[in-house]
Length: 170
Image (spheres, rainbow, N blue to C red):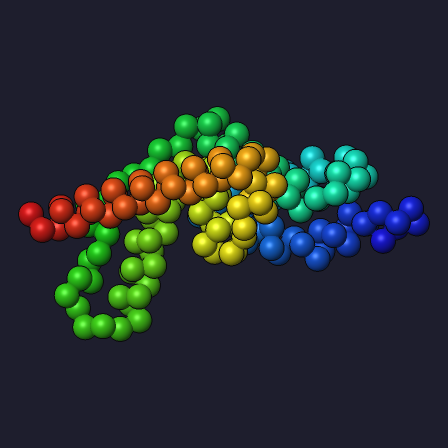
C-alpha cells in the first residue's frame, strides 16, 4: 500500500504478474505472445493505475486489457490456424505418458482454435474455476454473454471432436 492507501503498482505486478502471464499463455497458447500481451497491458495500466485501483477490480481490468491486446494482435496480423490432418500419431500404442501428452496437446489444439473471447471464457471457467460473475467482470460483459460464449465454445469443440472422430473412422 502506498501513502494514500492505494495498492502500489510495482508490488501488485510482483504479486499478480505470474498469474497474469499464466492466464495470457492459456489464452494465446504462445509464450512470446503471452509475454507481449501482459507487458503491453501493464505498460498501458501503469499511468492510469490510481484510477484503475479506484474502480475496485484492478485484476479484472488488467486481464481484460490482456485479452484486448491479444485480440488486437490477432486482428492486425490476421493469424490463421493451420489444420493438421492427424493429431493423434500414437493411437493404438501402449498406454503411457506420451499418450497423455498427445491427448493434452490435442485438447489444447482444439481450445486454441476457438475465437479469443470464447477461449478466454473457457480458460477462466475450466482452468481457473471462475464463476460467471467473475468471468463477466474480467471480460467486461454480462453473465449471460459469458454463458453464451462458453456454450458456443463447447458446441464448437464437440463439433470439431466429432469431425475428427469421423475422419479417423474413414
